[in-house]
Length: 79
Image (cartoon, rainbow, N blue to C red; front, top):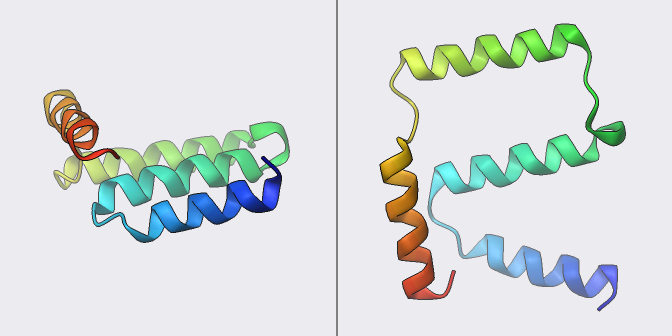
């Protein structure tokens, strides 16, 4: 499969996603991969840690058990 076909399939799959947490995870992976070899500065690393801690403090996170249950749901529905 070529890059254009793979990209098109990925876009179609993403358009079906209704779970904001999953979309945010996909976005984070894409942003990480688009950076030069995934390397970030110490400042960016610390900024991301601060942002993550703020989300946790607000209760904006998914527990391991919730993540496992969501994944099991994906398997049942085919993704």
